[in-house]
Length: 51
Image (cartoon, rainbow, N blue to C red; front, side, top):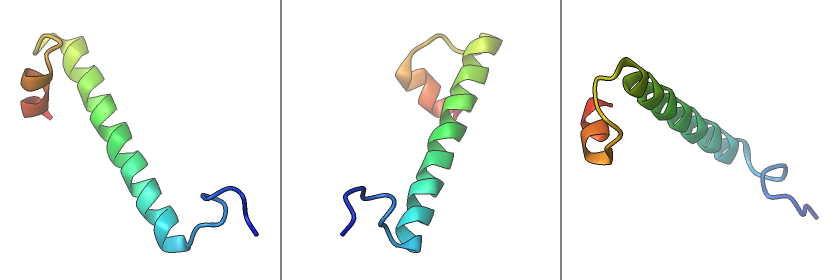
């Protein structure tokens, strides 16, 4: 019996988790780039339209 859910998960579940980590990483990196360029001030509504 497994105590850790990720180590005991099915390959499909791992693929889904990895996909969403990739999406999260993409959005984070895109947000940082937009803020560094000074395109938009740090405002969620303004940021989400730029991503």
